[in-house]
Image 1 (cartoon, one colour):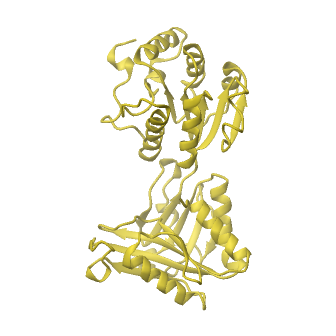
Image 2 (cartoon, helix red, strand yellow; image 1 turned 90 degrees about the horizontal axis):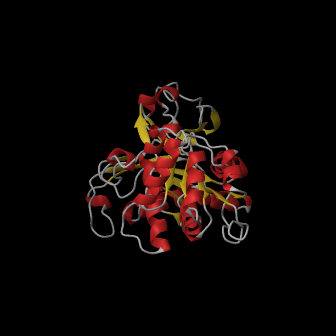
Length: 364
């Protein structure tokens, strides 16, 4: 599976080794389309590819045009109307419209834009690509001109003929709102969202499987446990940070911001309660705790007596994980990571998949 980071890494590796490559990306969709804006694909001179734009005739046409453009290095924006001329492999006619950026990269100078993008993604920072798709509406720039803007709206680099059009910054959406690709005033905005940190409190079997899945879907995983034999690189080879210490000590000094997700999956009631005491009133974007409703009620009652506010506990997702009838550790991990992804991508957990807090049921 190729992520944007791995795709750009492939591009950078190719150019550093003296190979040219064509970067192609879907920058606008209207109506029904098989892929959404942000999809990307690399095309190499031998016709091989990395990534996909959705398959079918459009992808084949983009590849054909990419191979034509590689020799002279010119960049184009291609428009496809998904009618009978561009049906898909299964005969489906979507009826929508797609605009594709086709950008040959033949030298280190050509690749400089992508290296900044790669450095930004690799560091976990957010950024937004602004691409001119309608020069008349944008009030400046040339079609296919691009700028990479950081989280504050400052230009990190550009692959453009002229300066940043004046319409770009007024329409730039905050990455804190986790926007999806959008179009405004002739500009296509393609956000690369800041990676969220996931603090897993408890390095047991559930924590281990959650760490594996969460890393695959783009979380930076930190693991906290008081047992070296559980919290180690052999069991968590892809974790960004491993913290071995007493839970009170480790969590009491942990820096947690509004991009941090926290889940509590320790080996016992007392440790869960200690962890929630330290996490419930932090700035964390999300706090969840595994366990039975009875255990959660007892912990909530204790923490209310300890001075943790009812409002803070009401925000805790507990029991943790979607109810999918989980029985095994892998199933439990799937239910937990699905909930994390839903909250990250939607900004909340819809009522239809998240029951009311135990506090709202009058249990505490």
